[in-house]
Length: 287
Ligand code: C2E
Ligand code: MG
Ligand code: MG
Ligand code: MG
Image 1: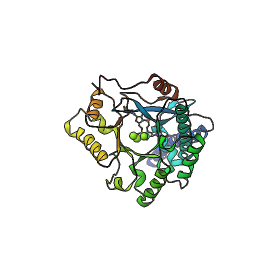
Image 2: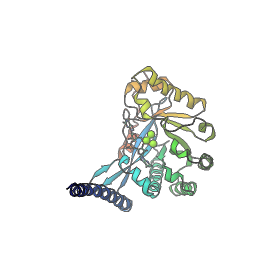
Image 3: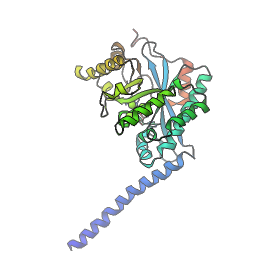
Image 4: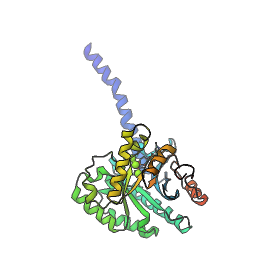
């Protein structure tokens, strides 16, 4: 009798596991076709200079316009794209689209602008990455200093010597390099001296702590000081309130990005912001 029950249990659980595996396979298959079917789209989130209040650039963020699921956010498919290696062709599409779009805006007189693109570990480990980026710059006509690559600390950890060499090659193309989500990785601060980095992006978990207690905000102040001592630009991510903005401005942060100014928006909406000259209200940081 016990044996029978055991078998029943097995039968009971197996369909659920199959369902999960099937779901993954379905998404993987769909992800494989998504490029050909032109289902990816880039949204752009403005980056604003805290001295002038003006838009100086934007981060390109991918979305998947799935025929049944609707607009799928990157957190739901980037991981799977990385596991399957599909992030390499998808990432190439992101780079090419972001560069072409930015060059079109510059040609229309809507600059100066710099576009920031996220790079995954798989892309970073492709030996042909520098050549591929050089080719994208050449075909789009975008000046190298108008392209910023966002890297995370985890990319550097496996092989530091190789990472240093690759970063110098990318820097040699004339690109800007930034560290995304700074402060959340396994950071050894020594890499900051070794690596030819231009920008630190303060992770939004630290920014959201502003206003909570003095200690929490101390981390933000320390990252700003660290960046400036190393002659790096510092960008605050995830700025949601006027209070956070004011705090960042008073503590010398260079740029901000966050819902307080604008969420990531479709290209047409971002273009309209540029045309309208949307900027931070003087009543907040600039009073
Ligand atoms: P990330 O690079 O750190 O991008 C910032 C994320 O924070 C974006 O989420 C953005 O929408 C969100 N965000 C911006 N301002 C605020 C704010 O004020 N409050 C809050 N709560 N969130 C804010 P998104 O677009 O969902 O992207 C999530 C992550 O997916 C990105 O984090 C990045 O790691 C990855 N990702 C997005 N696009 C790409 C891509 O083209 N390639 C690769 N490899 N990764 C990408
Ligand atoms: Mg980013
Ligand atoms: Mg980030
Ligand atoms: Mg992130």
